[in-house]
Image 1 (cartoon, helix red, strand yellow):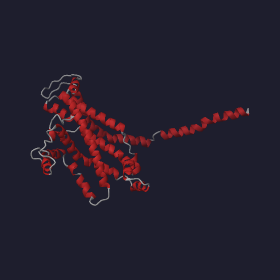
Image 2 (spheres, helix red, strand yellow; image 1 turned 90 degrees about the vertical axis):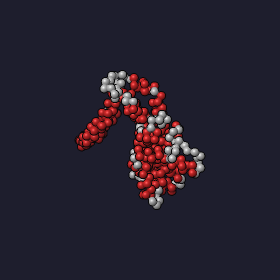
Image 3 (cartoon, helix red, strand yellow; image 1 turned 60 degrees about the horizontal axis):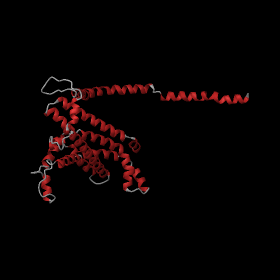
Image 4 (tube, helix red, strand yellow; image 1 turned 45 degrees about the vertical axis):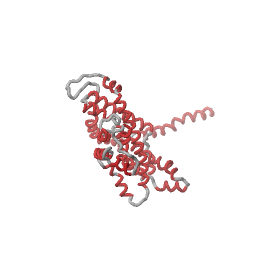
Length: 327
């Protein structure tokens, strides 16, 4: 009897011992009234912004997508539903495929160069040196100049007849005759990439510099005491701690580069060698007045950008923990 009683006792006591813990766990996970009220207040404060975004961005997007399934023209008020005909014709157009390749190549090369140069400039500006404040202010000048103004300025400088770039290269003996920078297909793409890199590198440098300034000096001092070299400190300490900020900067720059229009349009117009998706869509909508086909092109621009950004965010998830621990 005693053996049977003692063997049954642990089994009977187990539910009584776990019940308070289960009640405590459920009470801890259940949101309090204050948290629920705070969540409702957040949504109420965000509601006006969401309504404005829906009207400003949502309605034009919905209208563009709906027009892409019609044969609408600006010159004709009547239109009819054509299904996926515009998208099929768009995929079969070699000019659209060339525009997609141009856009992807432009975005990949320009964003990569801007990131590398931006980090390098940020590392220099983060060091203690005389005139650092003046140098930081001067660095922002290309970014502060309006895009159309800077593009037109570079168009004059790259002019093959009286451009200052050809004049300087001929004076120092690097070229024997003027080069048509914006007429040759390969040179034209290289030129627009160079102009965009000159324009957007300060933006990358500014974000990288802001991330660098969140890293405590004690981290570098400890690494130096352990015998770490400059390259090891950069790859094992600096780069991982600013990776989150760099990822956000790359996403923003990729968004701008994938929908690039103004720089290329001012420099080379609608030339096929440098035409991008946005230029192609604008040409169909404005010059050819083909609203249905142009809307299909604009919708594809939106979808391609959304897919690429989703892939980037998925592959390199933004982790803010390094920045929090560093600060």
